[in-house]
Amino acid sequence: MAWTKSSKNGYMYAETSAVIASSTNEQSSDTITDELGGKKIICGINVSTAADNVTPDFEVWGSPDGRNWVALKENVSADLTPDVLGVKIFYVDMTSEAAAYYKLVVNVGGAVNLGTSGRYKFFYGVK
Image (tube, rainbow, N blue to C red; front, side, top):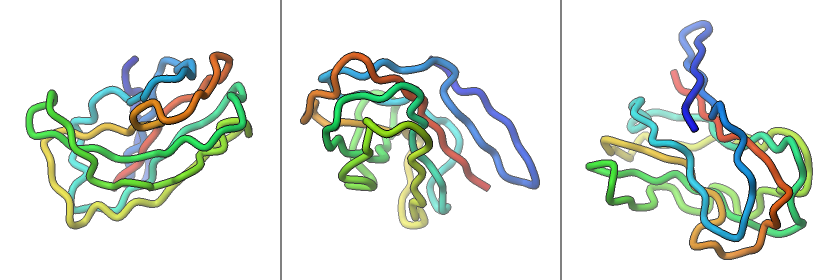
């Protein structure tokens, strides 16, 4: 999986180029190396094939080295509605956060069983 990036009117938008199959595991995006700290961002997932009707969470994590991670913004969403097609978009205030690396995380700790049929892409946007 890698990020595909584009820009318009000073805003940068990125989404994963590979579609992620849902599972019972915690899932995360590729590492984000763009600076998200000190900014307000939009982020989320785009569901192209529905998963099971469960309530997975969505968080933004940060890392100083790209290996050790901590949740910077927990419970961005407590229910992504992975059984409903389309974009799930969230506005996240990262103005008091800072890290060298970031990632988007779904189903933290593998808390729920998403099934195996769901497919989605991660995305984020920042100015």
